[in-house]
Image 1 (tube, rainbow, N blue to C red):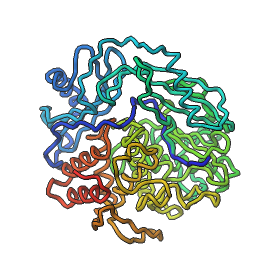
Image 2 (cartoon, helix red, strand yellow; image 1 turned 90 degrees about the vertical axis):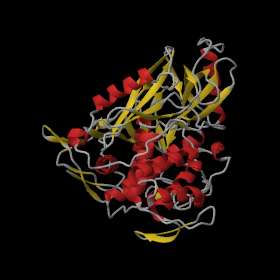
Image 3 (cartoon, rainbow, N blue to C red; image 1 turned 90 degrees about the horizontal axis):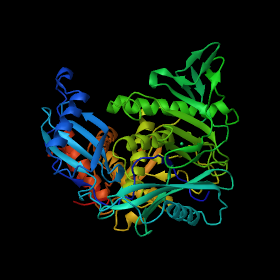
Image 4 (cartoon, rainbow, N blue to C red; image 1 turned 135 degrees about the vertical axis):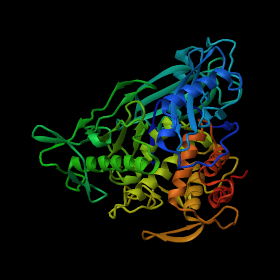
Amino acid sequence: MSRIRLHARGSRLATAGLAIAATATLLTTTLSPTAGAEERPTRATALENAASVLDDRAESLGLTAAQDTAVRDVIVDDDGTQHVRYDRTYRQLPVLGGDFVVHLAKDGTYRGASRATKHTISLASVAPKLAAPKAADLAASALRAVNVGETLKRLTSRPELVVDALHGAPKLAWRTNAVAQDSLGNPVARTVLTDARTGTQIDAWDSLESAAGDGKSLYGGTVPLRTTKSGAAYQLKDATRGGTYTGDAENETDLCLLTICLERAPATLFTDTDNHWGTGKAADRATAAVDAQYGTDVTWDYYEDVHGRKGIAGDGKGSYNRVHYGKDYNNAFWDDRCFCMTYGDGDGTQLGPLVSLDVAGHEMTHGVTSKTAALTYSGESGGLNEATSDVFGTLVEFHAGNTADPGDYLIGEKVVRSGFPRKALRYMDKPSRDGVSVDCWSPTAKDLDVHYSSGIGNHFAYLLAEGSGAKNLNGVVYNSPTCDGSSVQGIGRAKLGKIWYRALTVYMTSSTNYAGARAATLSAAKDLYGAGSAEYGAVGAAWKAVKVGG
């Protein structure tokens, strides 16, 4: 492969992120950690309060009798403030950009809403003029067009009728996921959004939002593992982290459509007789499994320890891993459909097995994003989606405190091989070091590949945590510039993580772009530290330093 990406694959409501998130009046009070647990509203109370708001304020939220809503996520702050996130359908069709968050005070009174779009959702008809087979053909052609020179096998596409509320006035559209296998048998996929009246392509994006007892791992040394005893053997399954387990994909691949898989690569659960896993060598198939299970463990621990989130969906349920996927597969991805992580072994020339800590944290964060803001994997919101995964993948690596793989602001540095043109997949201090990413926002950012426009968010995050200029952390030398010649004082990784997580889970929506991310992180900083705080000022300064202004 000529381009190496880290991905997260899923079936969430998603289209291009060209529309700016429309944010109503947001919270103005600073969070108080002193409210007693017994005084806090429960999830059920928050849902009841939000339901009342939807009844009372349907018109102001753009809801009509033709629409239905479904709860995606609920957050209750320490001070009792409630945030209930909804998806929306129109005449039983998914509305892309119909998502919104209702914000409530502790007593259940309405405080405001964050909406992906403020367009009125109303169509004269939901009968398409463009037939589904034609939409499928157009999507198949789009997949071929981005795989020029590649002979695609088993190409299949299935259209789904949706309402697109992200690209101007709402319109009827076909969302079609075209999937195939390349000459090596590895999956390629593209989602195409087509106007259901005219046949015009509205948007298209890569559906593989790619990117990565005790056990001897490939990258992290000897690591602790919690396993399950089964008869005389042990299973690589952790009951203390929601039943998360790791299986062998046996170098098989999937053939999946938007919501279903015609074929699913196996995930044969790893077992061991003495509860000491792997040899630290790639030739032992259990070694990559050790890294994958360990990566899942430390990602789970980071989100629970730092943000109080148990598991990817926040429901205490574990995901699972598949290692040894495909043939020479230079990728790793999260897939919502199986709620699982999948790791390729790499081609051995550019990349080795993609099971490093930061890759694991990156990919599973795509799952967290899917369950919260569901940032569209296209345009600026797609770059922000990728940056979110890079930020938390990095924070997971630091949180693990593994001396064999100490934290750094390099993405995938452990998996690169001598045939790869640089020392890491991406650099957060100065993203343009990779030769393709951008350090600063410009009006053309929306047109870039999401793995390159992510540089804007990565650069902001580094500056917010560490500040500008030269620095040496864990033996790695950084020298982060600013785009406006300013000097930025960092506030530390812990505060970066808290601000970004709150912005992601409370304020961002599917259409949030970089300007919207600035507003969301400022709101988060205001909630956490106050409007006059140094942290609030640092957020504004870091965004200004990457040319995202107010």
